[in-house]
Image (tube, rainbow, N blue to C red; front, side, top):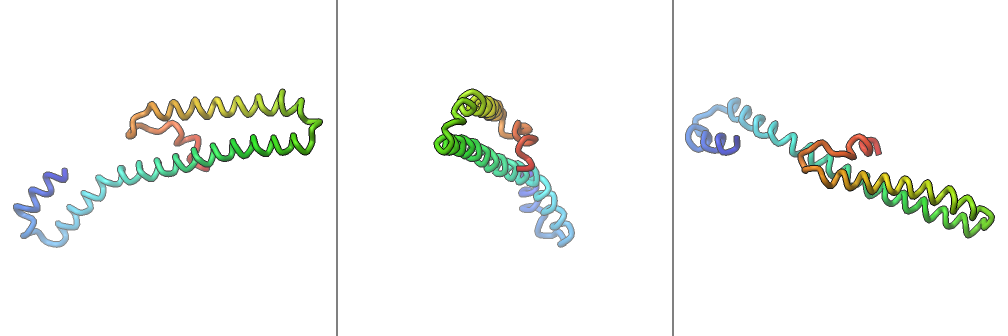
Length: 117
């Protein structure tokens, strides 16, 4: 499309009126809208992934702090908290792996998961 518009502009563009030139410009912008949207989604996804990873680590650190302050919760920490955290971490890593297998132009795996973060 760009090549066609370039060729048209080189041959006939000099005689086109402003309205026609604006139509050509809108056509170019319209075709790059999807690229801009993909870039925006990728930035949001990467930011959400980083935020989620940081929150997961923060949750673990807060659990360790609680354990240091309240040693009597050690059984719950070891038998429940760490297991639940490991399930979430495994899901997260599995989701990252699925996302990494997609092509850049595919609908991304995390879009529905992290869209509202």
